[in-house]
Length: 237
Image (tube, rainbow, N blue to C red; front, side, top):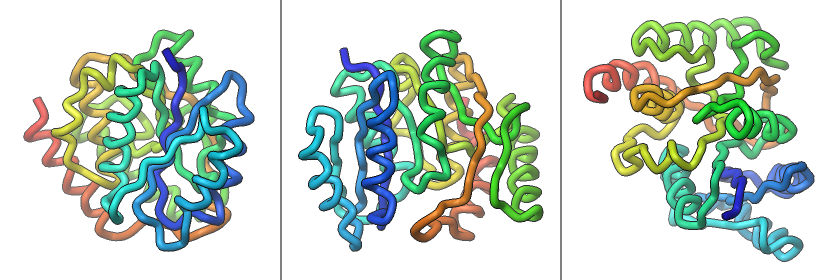
């Protein structure tokens, strides 16, 4: 059974994609990569295909018809990972806001530490944010506090996007019922994992602002997360 798959959703990430692929493939133990591209106008998928020729057994590409949202990209990736037998499946951004060198630590938290899901956390001891203004850090921290207060989640970095799932967690989750697509998707996944009784571990990381390309953050994504938390509390058993 293949061990570790990193899912990287992309939309207009040609400035980052080759470098992020190289960084993940250089890790030990070995990781495979699945890029889920939403028909990027800048030709991201073409660059992945070109790069895949250098390591076709470890670089994979799933092309979609348009910009369908982060959450649906990950759900498609999770289903692909389960079909192909991976034991550990990771979420990671393409823009180096997440350091690929943190992936082995998240893997170890599950494979050796007994966690069912591990989260790269900015807000536990040893975690931090680099290159953010103080007001952005404050807003993010308050948002996470709000989520914890409403959902009693017990995870300090509720919107974290660097995550490791064990296969048993993904098999237990009702993937077709996941409805949110932005930051609320990250919250919903953690909440569902917690409600199913799985153990979540937080691993301290340093989160950095993207170096190249444009942020996908919007007020719509923020609003979805804010109001989505209330919906989750009402409808998820």
